[in-house]
Length: 431
Image 1 (cartoon, rainbow, N blue to C red):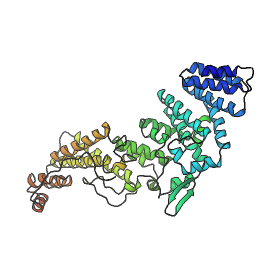
Image 2: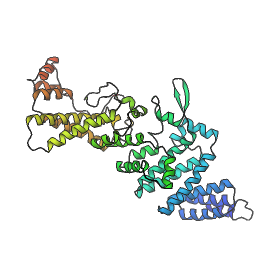
Image 3: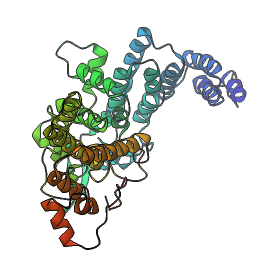
Image 4: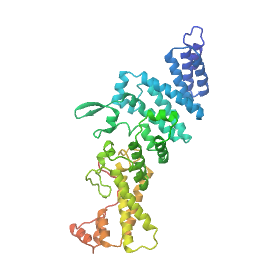
């Protein structure tokens, strides 16, 4: 096929050789022959042809460069220049139909092809440039580019249509992101979010420090940041959540404290913020408007108690009680955060989600069980031990081992067929 295209381009009767050289280059790329594709595209660049073909040729050159270039300063300068040009086309070639499709959002959310210029931006940046930048350790530039690729068209159209109780309603992207009634379909599902939610958290922190810096940025960095969604609450809340997931509660408090109080109501997990993470059995109560921060502070407190007392070689009976109680509550909180109160550490709950059946979740739940078991064994005060055993559904232990305590007697009198429920590593309720 490439040979046929090449013969057509070199025919004396050919009035548009550029399109045939371009086609030959395209076929060579499909065959995996990048050197041949690049050489043929060079011929297309020199040949005569209509503007639309010349624009397509430049797009294809961007694509081949992304696949083959050394990612040095020279390439990044060329990429900047190409993105400025492509961004201009995205703005000026937009049609009413593209605007309407973007407003409803579904096609963009699932990456369906519907607007050539934006499609090519996403194909080149998401498919080629970002993976290579990550491989060479430039995660900050990778995130900047992902942000533009995911959000630029939304920024240009600046309108989103949502279905409300009064029918379909159009609102600006700012209004959509600030609303507290509807789920945000974009910011917690796009490539930019998924990358921040999965790469090492230190890289996301570096990204935040550069994006929110006080010193002058390079022209390329400024260009990208102005065309993405740059919001401190969005980024800091995600970083804080990453630290909750890593059970690093001190750092979770540090970043969640930077998030404005009203922000939680704008997120998709706000509806689950009434679940009490310090109750062993699934319990719903009053909506906590600072759900993650409150949890992080309590867990940081328990973690500090445990770490402090564990380093003390001479503990009193009261110290053992305090240590054991802190370990039990820490274990309950950790179990909840990866199960019934999943919204503390995740952004969606589904048994098909990647996080659900993972070693780190299994490890967190096993560690939680160990904390509870060990903590209960450390406690010397029988009344406290009985209360905590009841709290974790171990009624038989409370009624037999601590029969002399008030809680033990009350538990035994309430039922003649007591049992100790086994630690469950899976919440089986509905969401």
